[in-house]
Amino acid sequence: MIEKDYIKTLKERGKKSHVYKKYQLTGLLIARLLNDEKHKSLYIKLAKKHKGDNLLRIAKDVSERKKVKNKGGYFMKILQKTHPDILKNSK
Image (cartoon, rainbow, N blue to C red; front, side, top):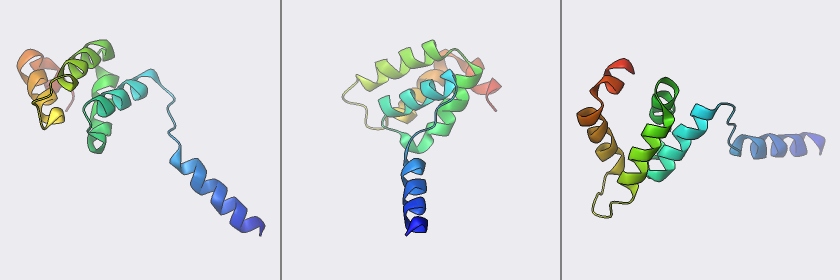
């Protein structure tokens, strides 16, 4: 009985998000704004190396555009055109 409760507790704990640094939160916010949870590690990496405020501003702008289907791709395209140094330094 105790083992089942312990396993259940571990499963519940694994479902919760563990954010320890500001850049992690920024990256997750960007992923949610762009509806692109699949690439959240990319956004966390970008937020870690660069100013999260600028990235969030761009992500909010992209998220408000209703005609854009692939918001994550559009976000990366904007970064490539307006801030080419960000993508070069992230590799």
